[in-house]
Image 1 (cartoon, rainbow over the protein chains, first blue to last red):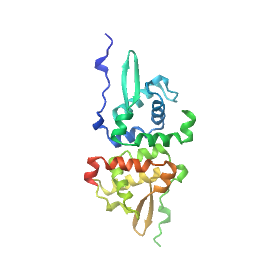
Image 2: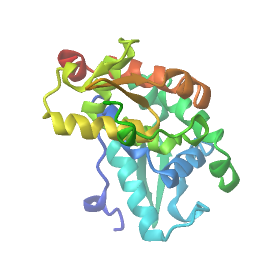
Image 3: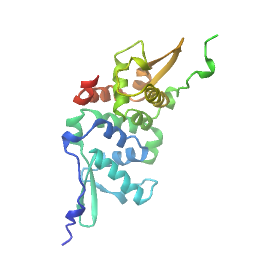
Image 4: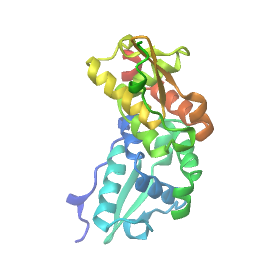
Length: 115
Length: 115
């Protein structure tokens, strides 16, 4: 069996998502880039699919911060850990917040150039 | 003379305000409370006027983080340091961002109870 149930990442419920934690998770330029990438990939993306200037372990760390804050969901698909944005949960919890932040991030030249 | 010009706090220009820094500055529950308080005080408020559960020096630190991120302006009025939100600058730089975050903060019971 390769279900890896003991390894299943934990996620806060919708009600447990806190504003300060979400803002902290999004307060890093690399994580903002990742979230922008996820916002354009409904089926999710794995760590390796991002063109960001960090090592795989740093990438893994960033995704953990995003997951623990409730910004993304991580699920195991075979050997691949797939990340998706929790857009519905975030919208229900903090209406307009994610869209406004993604819009602001998209307007920043330094981030746009790399995305 | 009591102008204290050498002590004048520095502020980033509108163009220098960065999204990640703003989100970081707002990713602390106490700073969110302070910013909510400032959003209702067009004439500004001094550190001591906030009913927050922190010491004056911690309050001063939080205001420094907010100022350096470009979220607030600090000006000296005699012996008083008055803080005002840079709403116009933030709106020009990241349209809708501050309002959305303040709205989200206002919807959080834990923050509302203390505000």
